[in-house]
Length: 452
Image (cartoon, rainbow, N blue to C red):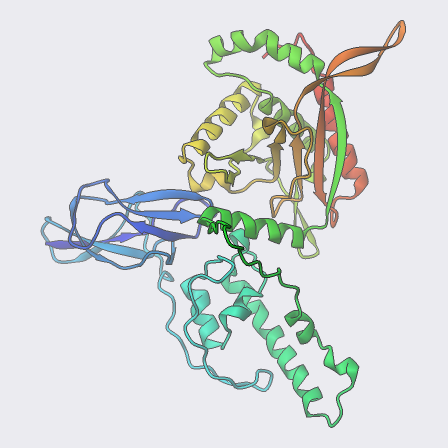
């Protein structure tokens, strides 16, 4: 009986690792070709890894909760085919085995002049109190350098959901050594001054912590699920990263509402799709981005990355109450029909849990429709590493003043609020305010005779 090594398959351009959620088969179980054997998760998307062919699950090489690199072996299957060699096989797409899949073995810690000698810390847990996952490579480096789990938790992460990457940890270590050396000198001084007591290292350790909350008698304690932990970390990271400013505009979308009522039956008959206002909002945002491309940027330190593609994320609420943001890639290349089909497809598969990992990656701007829940406006949190997000409120009938050739008059109009949150590091109030005003102008100028 030959053995086949199953590798973690590639799941998208920017997906480098996944978390093992649950094994569906035990060692010794018979598996059929294409039968799921393990559940995995990448950021917010859950998926399954199938067996490449029928056989016996001989060995599980990773455990529940492990973070595994793409191309890393996760299991061995014994097939009835002849031959004694072990051949690697990616479960779904034949991904080659990564040379760096296995984490390097720990090396002895060598004390240097800038880093005080200290014993190697004990094993670092895969998951910290905040719910962050730490890859095997990060844990090995932390153990070798004597970085405790508590210290690891304090390092700002640049990975998905604020996860600490190898680069984050390696960038942190030199500063850690400098701070330790700097604090040693005042300690040796005969009489440290009050100023010396407040060193940069002390300031880092004095980072404010959330208050401890204890449930009272009769309270129900509910542990966050994995997705909610990721959302919580991502939201906190976004508020710490970007100084948020929000601008509001009220738009008269009467013509848009009338146009949709006029064409919705014909649209569904011709295209087989129901048309909502969401693709129209996205079309207006895309047009405004083309006119003001500095909204479609990302920040790397003191560098601004102006994105070539316009990839619009659309926040979608799941039946579980959690949130996911599928992305319409190159939205500027789609007309209204194409956007409608893409919006409907992504929304339906998001609710059914059928999105692929790559379909929630690469967004450059996000829109969230808070009007779905009857809210008239909101102050959305930026979806990092983007620099802006727009919330569209509920469309309501309201009395409004309109200008006519005969003079001003009051009429019942369909009105809505647009809320635009943006990163004040790179988007000033002038640009942020003009952008949301331009989106409103496009919606207000929608022709009731427009073709689709």
